[in-house]
Amino acid sequence: MQSLLVEHLARNSGLVTTVRANELGVSHRQLECLVDRGELERVHRGVYRSCVWPFDDRQRLVAGVLAAGDRAVVSHRSALVVHGAPNLTSRLAEVTVRSSCVPRHPGLRVHRSRHLGPADVMRVDRLWVTTIERTLMDSCTVLPAALVMRLAEHFLSHRTTTLDHLHAISRRLSRVPGASALSSGLRARELGDAVPDSPAEHRLGLLVARRGVPAEHHVLVTTVDGATYELDWAYPHEKVALEMDGYGIHLRSVRAFDDDRFRRNDIENEGWQVLNFTERQVRHQPGRVVTQVTRALARRVVPLLR
Image (cartoon, rainbow, N blue to C red; front, side, top):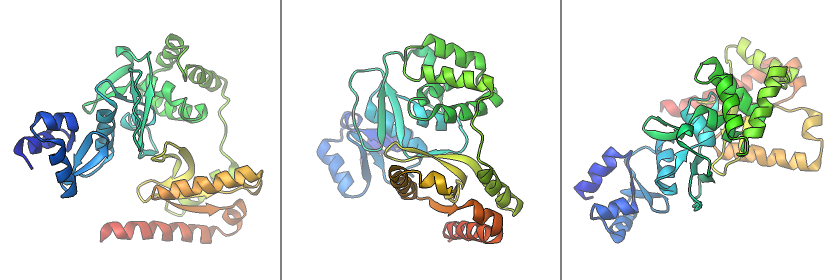
């Protein structure tokens, strides 16, 4: 591999575009030869990564920005991850561009906005990202507003945004998608209209916590195809999910039953193991519930230690 290309990869998270490679004297044919030899891997059309670099979340986002163009910024669920939203995992790179051309790439969701100004973007970890306020507003177009408001509570409690700032952006960009949903969510918060968790779900979390294996509540998983699912309880590091299944909820219609099967398959294709429990099991067989949870966690931890 040419020294100039190696130096560029070292300075740019192991990534290079076709245009930049050509400027460094590496032709299209040479790029393809490096791919055939296993030294480079094509991430998106026109974007390559060095195979010696780990393909982590940050590299995934940088590659998405490079594929979408110079005017792209990290946004929506990806921006939530960058800003440190809790219990949110995503293999999808999500960006917003200010041009009319919206490229399509697998594993990359590109949004278009004519109303993305300097006040709506900021620099985080050498990435241009939408501000927390703009991110929460945009996220209302891809997530239920109730979930977005739950995430907003995290940023409000950590004082990285304020209610005044959230109200201000919903007024300033009132015609932009997501603004109305954010405004409604803020009103519901003020009226105390949050949807409570089910008693059965609460009992499951209390059970595993008392038995020494406390789980994270309301973990969000975004698939590479852009679907986002909320897990009742989960262990994000081990990728073990605990789901409470109510008889009436999951059998309320044929479509709901089918959707639940697709949901589970999507989550497991993201590398998660899903354990399903009922209220009767939690009430009457708590020991067996905890045994199955601890065994699943042990199976997930052991491969990491080898």
